Image 1 (cartoon, one colour):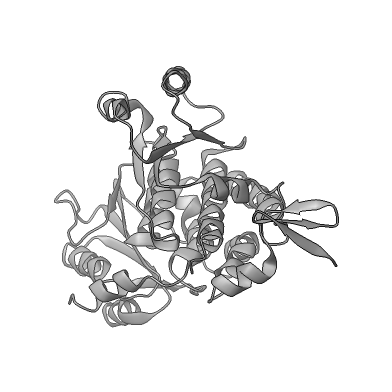
Image 2: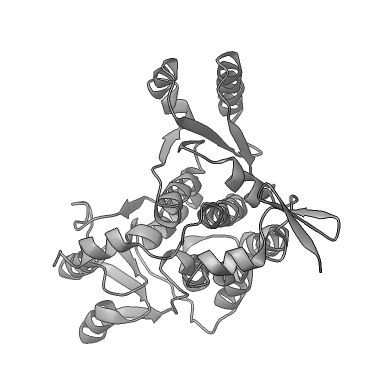
Length: 354
């Protein structure tokens, strides 16, 4: 195979490659990309695992507790359940809402099992006599649950908490989808569509036809991520992945709210670059706002990038967008000659807290 470089492009068998596998291997020292390549398989295996589903009685309030990648899972469930009658809170910190009681279900997620904040929530939920189910790969969470006879489900970690996303999400869906009244067909659809997306953007396709690579090449300076109602989990995870994988600053704003304040900041030239995450069936008034915002950017010569969801359920949209944008951050890191895996600053903070 003969290839030659053309300004960071590579011509291989008459196809333009934006990245070559040797560069990916060189900079991704812990081979995170290999886990990303397997996200769809991990999702299916997790949902088809032998984890036993469970039901709960007399629940009128659900709390998802977790930090970082584990907290992102709570955001997804809150979004998926937002159009139901279920009262949902997401806790990213030490304390439960005062409304939590014996009729509350507290779901704690910590990939390591040692997340200080989530362990605090777990212990508080136990004291409040709430119903509880916990998910981790082991650690202190498993020990506490075993000691206090709390239902704990052990889920493997793949590479890192953020890379274990589909393992945890689809294990929780397997265990709780009936109780949460999430349609079985929606879950299967989300996995099937994820498999399709994976083939288009994973490391087997490093050509100009890889849309995640194209976005990675476009990103520079500080990304400003705009999102609509329902897709907040996608934007927040994208922001977090840009920060962790790429080691750059990133901002996320609700598109409707931004038009009441943040829009004014564009009156002064800056190194912020807008990325618009849009749902294919956004609310009609939200679609009107997207139109107005894009016209504003064009009139003021502000370059922006549009990312559109695929068709399907809200779960399908969120999972596929999350995968696309996560892989974008990995590609950006490697194209910038950075290593996506290490998070030294997080490790330093963790080592200095109890």
